[in-house]
Length: 369
Image 1 (cartoon, helix red, strand yellow):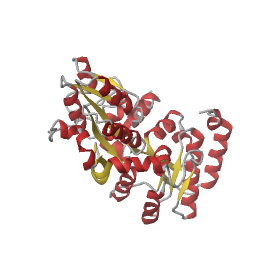
Image 2 (spheres, one colour):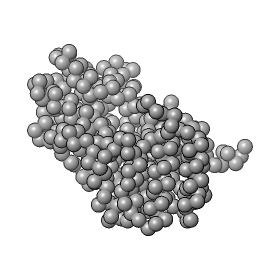
Image 3 (cartoon, helix red, strand yellow):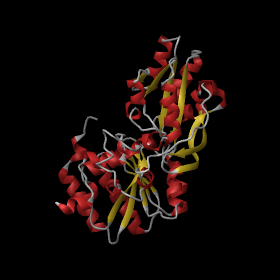
Image 4 (spheres, helix red, strand yellow):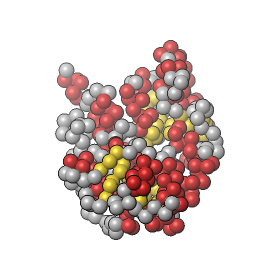
């Protein structure tokens, strides 16, 4: 980004914080959905600088963290097959499955490769016709267009040795599930700017109207987030519940129509189980019947498997925003980024990793010093 410093200006940050303090007359609870936003908030200490009474809850917006345990186990199983070149983004390699992770498979001799785009995996398939190349297609709506384009390219070129293990999830159903939960405390949301750059924000308008919650499409820099919080608090104070756009430099209401068309062509909406949260209706994407030939689960006849989360991990409660990483007995001890028990300590967007990297410690530890 060319003009990055402007979105990290400390004087402007102080002015936004002062305006927040002058605007808020009562306590408000706001959730940022995106893990990238969580890392900025925690790293910059924004949650600790907010006026008393304004509380941020960190949401389930880490696609690595919510990838179902059974899907991680399927990835581990596929990667161990001698005929397979298993490709993935790097942050999936250390996500723990029931008994192993992809990095351990690689250490044992599995052909596991990190790629930066799904088209790299397509090229690997083109250059290795005697091997089966599988791409781990995870993510929210942000990564779905590129994954759709990879499948379309493979279909057009008749590439018979390329397939995808799909674990796409959708943001609006997750927001609805949070609002429907009996222990919900969220009064407003900061929506993820990159998701809305693809999808726009029309899907959020019925949610805001039905549940009477403000939703502010927000960017990822400190000033983006402070302005987004201020916009949400203004609505809450005024009794309004609208979808507004802070991230005007990147997001339009209609989103990217070409990207949406590619996603609709390749994928269809499906129920999806979210790791730590459970099943959410119509919250995922699966390959549509026309592209079932590129479905790794079908190609390799992957069936259901028994899974078990680590008993000390409270990732589900953290992903739902009902507890903080520092509430976990394993945090910073049995569970660290080098030895993670759960996915939120692995991912670059995970809340536990954000807290750990920022040096946050349990309150009891701080009080003992």
